[in-house]
Amino acid sequence: MRNRVLVVLAAVAVLMTVAVAAQAQETDASVEGKGYIWAKGSGMAILDGRGRVHMAIDGDVVIYDYAGDAVVKIGAVPEEEPDGEGARLQEVSPTTTYTFDNFRGRMQVVGSDFRIEAEGDMKFRGHGEGVVELDGRGWWKTLRKRGTWSGTVLQFGDAEAEER
Image 1 (spheres, one colour):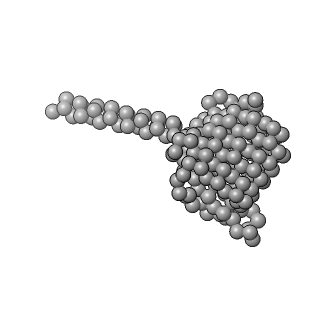
Image 2: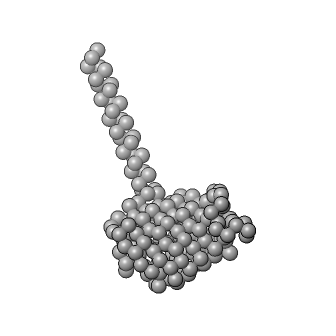
Image 3: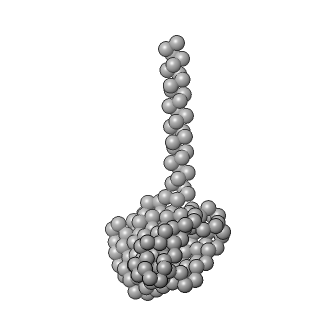
């Protein structure tokens, strides 16, 4: 009897370990990465990669969902609210290309392969891995580096962020 209990407990432990590992691997592959980037400025920003991006913008944005798994949430800001912090995010119907012209508000993009092209006054933070191009006036920083926009191309994620 004691041996049966031990065998059953061992089997349950193995199954739970496999399930937890599979779930962690799926989450890592679909939305999480290892790099962080913060930026604020006026001009053009292009983000290619995977992970999660939060953005506040007054301008134009186009989002391309190459993998078909992105979740996009937006919150438009009323004209009388100058800071834009009160915009509540709501999920947008899934599609492969999202276009927001003259958009003023906040947005969040989570996915495994997407591209964000933004032009205007913006601030954003991202977690994941990919490439960011910044042109205009503003600043950016990662966990270990910082700089100004002026035509900068950054790679962040697996390795320490590096300027190209």
